Amino acid sequence: MSHSPTSPTNNHGSVKSYVTGLVLSLILTIIPFGVVMSGTLSVLTTIIVVAVTAVLQILVQLVMFMHMNTKADEGWNVMSFVFTLTILVLVVGGSLWIMQHLHLNMMIG
Image (cartoon, rainbow, N blue to C red; front, side, top):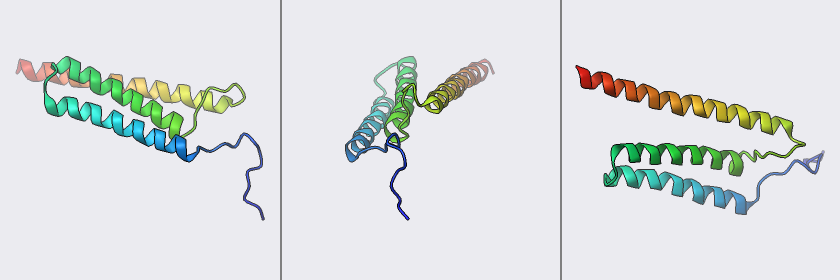
């Protein structure tokens, strides 16, 4: 019994793509950590930096490790990507909205 891929489109990542993904993930983790720990930026700027790097981190994970792309012949990848982006917007946007309202309600009392 052979364990070889049955189709040429069954393309898994190379060591180079995994190392690139790891390095990008580490950089996108260190940046918000450094911004928060240094405390030199304003609160709004810090939140924006953390949110942007979180979104970039998710995109790096999807492209480098889960091999999602926008090729026309892989319709399921496109649908999965759109679903992921929708959930991403809901989770990140909802979290920021909830935290903002919690902050406002704590300031009133």
